[in-house]
Image (cartoon, rainbow, N blue to C red):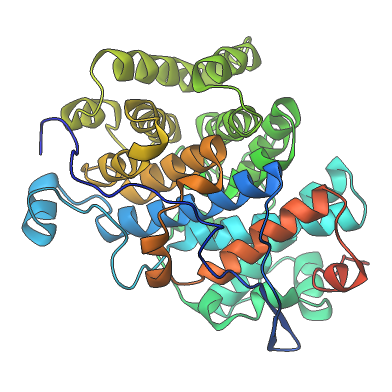
Amino acid sequence: MAGLFFDHLGESVRLHESVDFSPVRVSRGMPLLGPGSSTLSHRKSHTRAAFVMSAFGDSMGGAVHHDDPDSIVVRYGAYGICSPPKPGLVTSGTQLMLFTADALIRNRIGQNSRTGALRELRHAYLRWFKTQLALEPNRGTAKFYLEDSDPGWLAQMPQMRQVRLSEPCVTSSLRQGANGTLESPVNSNATGVALTRVTPIGLVFGPSEAFWLAARAAAFTNGHPVACYASAALAHLLADLSAGNPMTLAIESLTNSFRGRVEAYSVITHIRDAARRAEKTPRQLKVLEEISRDSAADQVLASAVYCFLSDPDLSRASWSLALAANHSGPSALTCSVTGALLGAWHGANVINRRWLARMELIRAIVQVADDLSDAFDGMFNASDEAAYPVMTN
C-alpha cells in the first residue's frame, strides 16, 4: 500500500438523473415526504455534493480511524478500504455538520446577522450534545433554552441519538455551555475535530465571511489558534471551490487571510507544502503519512488538500477518498474533509450513486443540504421555515 493509489475503482456517475432523493423532515415526530428536485441550481448541486461526499469520507475513514495500513489490508484486502462499509455509519462529525447547517438556516430565517449566527451555532451544538448524552449543559441560559425551545426535526431523528466517535474536548466544552471564544479560549486543544462541522459555512458565505464565522464556530470547543484557523481555512477554501475557483487560486487567496496571524501561520504553511507535494509526488501513501503526523488541525487539513490535489479529476474522486482513508492518522477527519473539498469543487456529478443505499442518514443529509441552499437562495416558504424554529429568547 506504499505505492501509487488506485487504478481499479469505479467511476462516479450522475446523482440527480437516476437516484430518488425525496425529502424527509420530521414534524411532531413524523416524516414528511415529497417529490425530489429533478434539476439542481449551482449552489444546491455543490452543497449537496459536499455534504454527501463528506459523509462518504466520514464513514470510510471512521471505519479505520487511526488504524495502521497493514491492519487495514488484513481487514479489507490489498487495496484497503475503497468505499463506505455496509452499513455506512457516520461519526459525530457528520452529525455536527448537520446541526451547523440547521443553525445557519435558522439564522437566515430570523436575525440574519453575525451575532445571530454565532448564537444559533452555539445552541445547535448544545442541542446535539443533549441528543448524544441525555445531559443538559450546566449553564443557566443554555439549559433554559434547551428546555423551553422547539429542538426542530433534526434533533428528533432517532439516528441522531446514536453516540458515535467524538473527541473529549467537544463533549467537555459543550457540557460547560460552549462558551469558548477566540479571545477567551475554552482549552488548548489543537485537533481537527471542528473541521467537518464547519463545512456548511463555506458553502453559503463568501471566503472572507466564511473564514470569520468558521474560526468562531470552532472556538466553541477548540481553544488553540491552529484548530480555529484551520477550520476557518477550510471554510475559505470551500467558498472558493464552490464558486468555481481552482484549488491553486483558492490557496493563494487564503494566504492573504493569514498575513499577520503568527499564532496560526502553520496552517497555511502546511497547506502550501501539501500542494507542492501533490504536484511532485501525488497518490503516495508514504507522503501522506509524512504530512499527517498527528491529529492537529493544520495537518489534517493539509492531508485533505494533498488527497484532493492528488486526483482532482471528476472520474477519480473515489481514489482521493481511498487515499485519505487508508493512512494511519485521523482517517475520519481527513477523509470527510477530502470529501467536502471534492463535492464543493465538482458538484453533484461527483457522487457515486452505488454507495448511497448503504449510508445511514442519507436522506436527512440531502434534505438539510437542500434546505440550506434554498434558505440562502430565497426559496423558502412558510412551511419550510416552520421546520426550523427561530429562537425567541
